[in-house]
Amino acid sequence: MKGPEEKRTKTKNLGRASAQVENSSLQKTPVSEDSGEALSSYWLMKSEPESRLEKGVDVKFSIEDLQAQPRQTTCWDGVRNYQARNFLRAMRLDEEAFFYHSNCREPGIAGLVKIVKEAYPDHTQFEKNNPYYDASSKEDNPKWSMRSLILS
Image 1 (cartoon, one colour):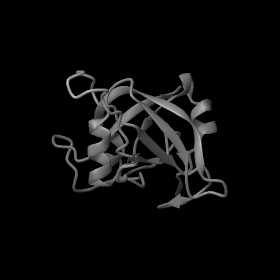
Image 2 (image 1 turned 60 degrees about the horizontal axis):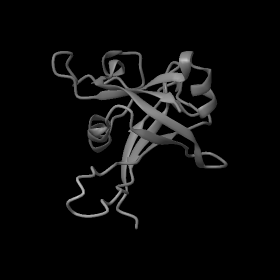
Image 3 (image 1 turned 60 degrees about the vertical axis):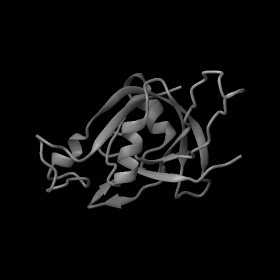
């Protein structure tokens, strides 16, 4: 059974993850209505593994780039879509996501990652030289969030 798909956009910049996030809305169904089992979400973190310039900065990020990060951990920054931001905020610690290569010769799932940090303000929204700078976002009330994840 497959539910509707919802997109999240996330991009890597300056050594961080480049991707989008989707919640496929696929969920485990409890064996019985009174079983007390919680429903689980399955996340899809989309990344562009091939070079693409955004405001003069190459925003490519692949599973190999994640593997090269210290402790194979990175922040998922650059999300500038409200629905995707809300998905990032809805993720829970230790939930897993598929790392998906998109906009490339061979798109598909490249690996599995795990959410390792609660949502926090995306610092790129405040950096004027960053492709994801948002002049309308304020430090005392940031619009955009990010997560940290680790290669599973």
